[in-house]
Amino acid sequence: MMKLLHGYPPRKGIKAAVCLVWGILPWMGFGVFLRSEWVRNDVNGRGRQESTLPVPSTPLDRRPRPLNKYIPRITKRRRDFAIFSGASGISQLGSMNVAAAGPLLALAITRSPIAAGFVTAASVLPGLLLQLPAGLLVDRVDRRTVMWTSQLVRMATAVVACLCLTCSFDSVTVLVVAALIDGCCSVFYEVAEIAAVPELVSEKSLNLAFGSNEAKLNVSMLLGRPLGGALLAVAPMMPWLVAASTSLVSLFALPLLRRPKIGRVSGKRKSEYRATDSGGRVRDNRGRPARRGVGRAPDMPLRSVLDRLLQDAFSKAVLAVCVLANFFFQVIVLLQIFLADQRGLPSYLVGLLLACSGIGGFVGAVGSPFLLRKPPSVSVVFCVLAWVPLAWIIAFKNDPVIGLAMWGVCSIIGAHINVALRAHQAKTFPSELLGRVTGITRFLSVGAVGLGALSGGWIIHLLGTRGAAVLIGVAFTSIAAVLVGVLYFADLRSAFRDRAFIVVATTLSGVSLILSRLSDFFVAVEKRWARAREVAARASAPSVPCADTAGGDAEVRPEHAVAARVPMGKG
Image (tube, rainbow, N blue to C red; front, top):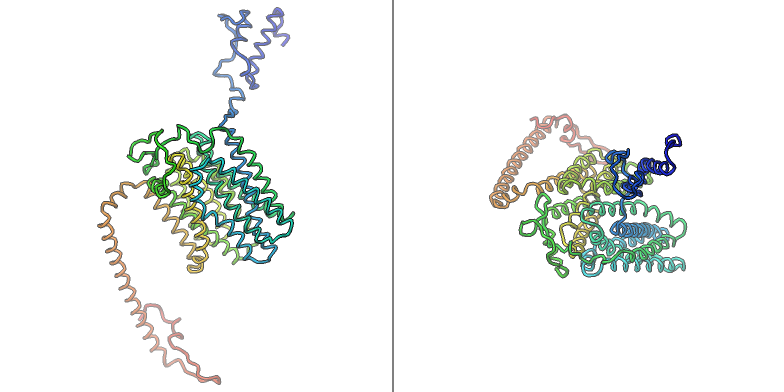
């Protein structure tokens, strides 16, 4: 540096040093804090005046960007969503912890699986009954108020349960009531949370926001259940104490969100209902491109909201896929647990394999914003087509380890479909309807889970393990075929609708003809088989003796004796 500055006057040497520092600082990421025109003009001795003398410098297009160019700017929307998402994640962790600890504590106190079943049913029942009322309430009341009140009631319930367990009251009754109230609060909070996301982020960030919400839910499920068991080993009241603490965090975090309140509709989101065509393109109910800034629908009845939901081709198709998939996923889980019990797999290995679902859901939710860069209809169809080979692998292998691993891979796809459906509904339906749309969607999907868990055991009992596995493969293949037909063959559907009578009549006549031919074939086979058995019985009758024993008559049936030697179908 001194050799480089040798020969300059003192003032010029200082200014040349400043110029050299300016050439180095951009590589260190601090060039943004200096003004280039000030340095250039001051080195030339003209203050802030323009200079015509050339100054050696690195061209702008060859200079690296400062480090702060790569750091995202913290806007109010990002700050609010970070607070909102963090508070919800902590609260859901506490809720999952209590949901896992309640049945375990009831079983430890009473040694009765019936008591544990009552606690589990109390926590699950609100998810089946309160989705629609929660959607109606969320569309009429400020969504932040609904979430804040839910957290307040949940915290009070957890504190009361903790005190009752400490004072040794009737523990099972306390656990059932606490699980019921906690389940109700969870339903109202989750519906309000999903409906509030579009008011916190911009429309182009909806995929990322719903993806992070889905990932947070899977992480809370994955960590909350082991946390509940671990806290229960410390003390019986510890899970509820932790749940009260997590709700307290949300109580302090939610009022920090900016105004306008969550649920208040901005001018940009006051949009009329926008249906989509088979390709997922947004259209209004007259078939024209959707317009913004028209109308509100806070008092629309639930039946009208359901009609609007069914008019949207993408929502209707994906919702049908979710309902069927949730039903058969429960059959898959019960089948794999049954196979694991038959083969004597240790319980810890089954628990680890069941955790594959949470891991897969987290991976799918994190990767969903990148996959949704394509149109949602395209990505969802590819995801459903990917289910088909996984379902047939489960059917053919009939191995619980492979089956539960494939179930985890299916969860990756399921999380992506959840994010795609929520983001599409947030972009398509006006904000005043999102609570009811979310309530209807969750009611159908959660109801399918309960129905699948109830029916799975009967399906396995009636069809056997192999038959149930084949049914799963056929079901997922049919789901993929129906989805492709609904989303991409609108012309074929319209042609079928116009000629429905002719098509149905032709189909029925063809089916009846095939059935008649099959019945004739089976009758002919049965006659030939009866004739063969009769001939074989006559041929072998003299060679089969009838012997008397001390205990009475012993009858040997000739047809049973020779059936193994007579070839089938030969007379």
